Length: 250
Length: 266
Image 1 (cartoon, each protein chain N blue to C red):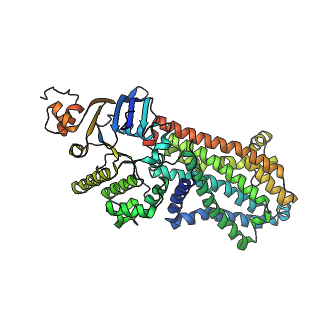
Image 2: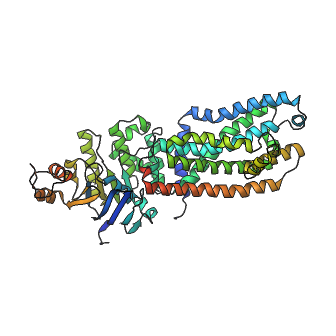
Image 3: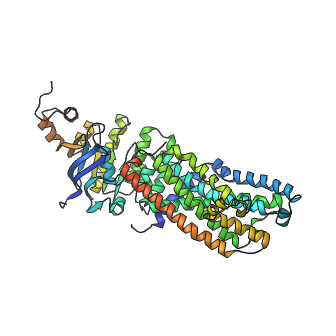
């Protein structure tokens, strides 16, 4: 692993019978970087993130995170990582404070009340700490899920669609929170997103997936230039439709 | 495997206590069925006492059976139902990407099963005293051994049932309720194992609960404590619990391979 790389993936594959959900991908993510994992539905983004978290076992390949081999030593790195996704829930009947308390303890946070107070203020969720998680709006749930992901002040934060289902104002605030967190902590962010303006604003590295394979990598600026497009939205469409860089879209 | 953390086990147990506390109906429900069973069998006992010499000799036979049976039933259900809650809540993936180890999840499930069993059966036990003047503690110190063995067997079945649901999805949930009732006729709860046909007796003696209920009858009818029964039950329970833990862990491993943890839910 290069000295500054905190995520190293080599020839990683996940096959379900004849279906190759992820097919021999390799990439590294440097410490402190914000990397976007992009691709259409079924491209292999969530599968890749699940393998990084040890939730899914690879068919073949190697993953090293923070210098530890995953999934073999996942237990050593999980306390230093966290994950947020609107597609993975928290218990509905527990209050927000109860949910966060349980997860704070699971992640070994010692001063739970203090940490909750900080997150309550930073993410503006303190007002509904005593409400059941199930009674919150989609936007409020996303903020609570992000609070859960920041409980242990992770060195690596994996985000699956971090601003899905949020209104533009709330989504913008979430992006600011993530940017602030990264600036203060030096954390590494790996996010899967369909929001290309978000990617342009947050990310300094992009990995484009299609049918389980990496089809393009670079900074957003590099990719826009390479594909001769005006923004990442157009680059995304080119790649999703299988158009190579340099080809002219009719 | 890394070291087991009591802090993490405590955190998850806290999650289940929060859940229990969030609904008074749940607490009432825990005690409801054991109490109804106790009342029903109490009246049956009172009626039969005037007609049965066996019951006249040991009036607590049926009530002890029903209350101890509920220890087995509640401990199994207490474990598997709480595990199903995680699946219903789509929270299992969140737990398994946290530093929580699967073995810690198992221990937390066992702890909350113990709490739920103590609440459910405990209330029925206490109500039996004013209702029928029956005190299960009259079984004396062997009661601890009976309780422990039934708890262990309930956990073993609970883990096997949970593994089944993890493998085949929530459609298999009804098995949680049905599994233990399939064993009930074999355990000799209300009658000696010798009542069964010989070929079924062979099966019955492979179940720890059969030794517990025979041991219970030995205390109540013969006023003897059968340590051998208790040890046989314990030995079998070590095997069954080991099997239950092994199958549960293997199923989680398999689910990681198959990717089913990503989709677990209703």
